[in-house]
Amino acid sequence: MFLNRIFYEESFELIKKWSWSEIKYGLEKSFITCEDVILYARNILDEDTEDFDLVLNLSIANENEVADVLISLISNEKTEDDNIIRSKWIFSFVYNSFIKAYDISQVIDEVYTTFNYPDEISMLVGYMPCEDCNTIDERIEQYIKDGKIMWIL
Image (cartoon, rainbow, N blue to C red; front, side):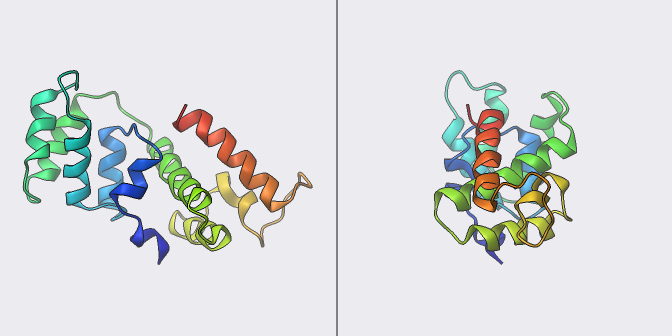
């Protein structure tokens, strides 16, 4: 399964800014590990970091403490809609496979199944009908362009 092979470096290298709710979602779905969460905390830690003390605690936490510190960090941020969080992770996997030149159709099929057939990428799945008459490659490029505007720029 491709999604289980995604690690911190790939998940967070292309999209630099993640909310703690998004991080927790990735951890709960096993897209990332506790080690990845700790490494992310270490990488974003500087004097301007919001909730510096909590992020510092997370950066030195052991695996058993990660969930509790994440809950504290999440309580200090604006509540995020689960669908938005899920969409960011979906984009992350599709974008990652696009950039890294993985078999994108295989990745899209796996993401489509893993995330319970989300409408937002159904037009990227080869066996699904599409109404816009664009090729799969054109639809993928448009999805990446739109996602970059939403999640990266």
